[in-house]
Length: 431
Image (cartoon, rainbow, N blue to C red):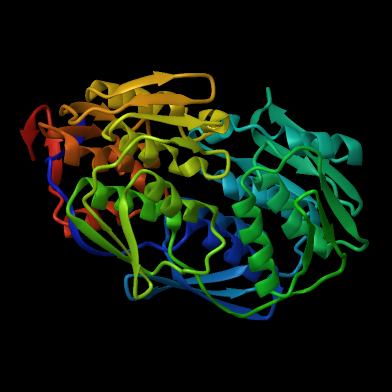
């Protein structure tokens, strides 16, 4: 097995934060649903984004991918109904799966959805309940993908719990404006991940579609709305910036560019969390600058920002005092069970972590050990462990390091540009 040997180096320098995956998914979908042509700038073609591009192509959109400086530009021509069932391969992208299911029922009268890895068993019960009420026919394999659908989504009242993935709400928000007749999404419990819903509403508005937010308890959606093509710039990704923010705290100094100060991304909360932990983080001329800091433990509620949990666990592991990660039940249904995977691998490095049902209790240590750790085929676990190497006494050997391609294909390139040393390794021997 080929692994990556990562030396215990402190990171320092300047990095262009990659484009937001969440923003790009939404822009690609809205452009594909639009009349006319759109140009989407600053797109990173990760495996997840490619899944959405290919899915929208299967549904009839024309999408060209063009090189544009470090990242890419998409030229998108909105599609017309093709009324043919299509097979959409979502790979491991939960966003692609949950966003495109309602759209396929409006545009295509259904289709077939397949996936890979843990996506095959990601829960879809929210949609199944809707299908049963509306008479939409569906077949799966003992509750898992592949999923075959046939039928039409109808306007009306949709009641969804707020403590399951907001991806279901977003998927309906894309599809319901296209249907004749008005709809309302009623949230029956406190809505989690409000930032993702805010981002959806913002991108929809940019493409000419209105969703009225009634205090996150109801979302009013008029029918027969029309998406309008436009030029759209994808902003930098706060969930990915979190790795470099932690890298600056555990290293020397990192300056991050391409982050919108007006962003509605929920993971922008990383700035406030780091400040609570006594991290030296500043906003200088629109950039985020983070310097080496002696951080302290705190309690972090990740119900609104689950993707930040792995890197915050790393930060807590080497902070003074106790850090608690709470309300993290949904982390168990990500690319890996992230409560278990990050606990398991950091413990191998000497971290003091106790895992609970939906929480982690972390007692900080001054340094971690080196050694062999695994990504669990999870991009965020791989990147978090890479950042942890700065506090290791010995080199860190990481298996499954290519998993970063799911969301951040240029991660290792950026890591090395900041002074990190990582090279391929096999059976203890450099290649």
